[in-house]
Amino acid sequence: MMSGDEPAGRYFPHPIDTETHVDDSEWVPIVDGERYFAAIDEHLRAAGPGDTILASGLEIDPHIDLCGRDRADPDHVPLGTQFAQAAARGAEVRLLIASRVFPSSLPRSGLPFRDNAFHADHLRRLPVRGHDEPPLRGRVLLDFSGALLGSNHQKTFVAHIDGRLTSFVSGIDLADHRWDAGPHRRLELEGKRWGWHDMVVRLRGPAARRVWDAFCERWAETLTLPHEHWLASPRDRRRLNPPGALPPPPPAPPAAPVANPGIAVRVLRSTFHRKVDSHLPFRRRQWDLIPSHGHQEIFTTLATAIGAARRYVYIEDQYLEEAVGGEETFELYPFLHAAAARGVKVILVGSGTRDPEDVDFGGLEINRKINDDVQTKIIDPLSPPARGNVVLYRVENCTVHAKLVMVDDAFANIGSANMFSRSMYGTDSEMSAAVATSTTVVRDLRVEVWGEHLRAPITPSVRAALEDLDLALGIWRPAWLPEGAPATTWRTAGTPDGFAPDERAITLVGPHVQGAS
Image: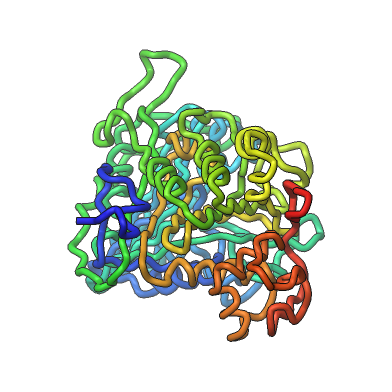
């Protein structure tokens, strides 16, 4: 039983469709793609007979190297080759890649979904020396289920190696330019410095089983989708999912409990309420295995956690505004407004550089001003003094692709779901992993993330200052510093003691409140 005074009872809604794993599962955050790709590489190299690898993503690029080597490097190993070799060694390998019928079929489109069709076709045909048949034939599906304007946005990786189950829930696709780490100086975009900041959770113990089972459920649903086609060229028409796909993997194997006192974990989903959506009612299809109402577990959990906040709500997100396909009922803005109105510090951190794959004609630099949704739905309804409880920052020269929510150093949620309502409602299918805890795991994550954005070495004295929540909140507004702390704290080298930033990477977008900035 969880009492309302415990973190799980306070920040997790109860009851909910998903199970809460208390004290028996590991929830470990991983910041940025370099460390995540290294972990995936390790599992793929280890996979052999009797092991299982299950991966899903908006993109899975078979040509990338998980160690960041380019194709000219003699040690370059394509990801597709690693999947194929694991299957050839006897591992059960399955890949689910997002697809949309219309853009996938455009002959000369540069849209990601068209690339996915080519990538899936490449993986299915990929040979391995000593094997007559391509090992991945029948093991790669394109999933175009869900809302008409949505996508299968889940990004998961599951490995069962030598009897040990590990699941990763993330916002990071296995795709080019995701291999990055702070201080984000290694990438370039249009000849300029660029970074890609992202986030993953590693799960072990019983909580990891839901990621496996959700993958199997999606695989089974994809097998029953209508037979659709795409054009590899104007004269080459192919099935999106050719015959011969394997049946779903078996249910998740047992996962031994991992003793983890003070940790409660939930694996959460957002799913649309139809398997096939259409403007034509007779073409619509309902799910076979997923509930007819879909899933809105991420929204329910985040709304509860934000509603329970006492000190701060911190959100990193690529999109801090609504997009086509959302539903007003599932917006988080009212909960953020209510938090700020009762004195909670609401911190929103977004990109300084747009994801280059986003279709937009406004240029690559974004978050130059507060967007209309944040302005009209959070800030404007607040009293003038309460507006000082909200800040929106951008990280310069960086795409903030992380989908991170932290509350009060006691709750965190990481996964594929953006904060806009299309992710909360299920227009885009999503998965995240949330933790409610009385331990330091969320505080330690906050220290790591805020330290990365400060671009300063985390010396023992700087770590101690970041661990002090009263002092650390002053990063975002001097007015939030505790009484007696200099207003230059976090803005001048030496305050706090040992603070020596290499650069200033975060910029206040607003609101600029008199006496609070």
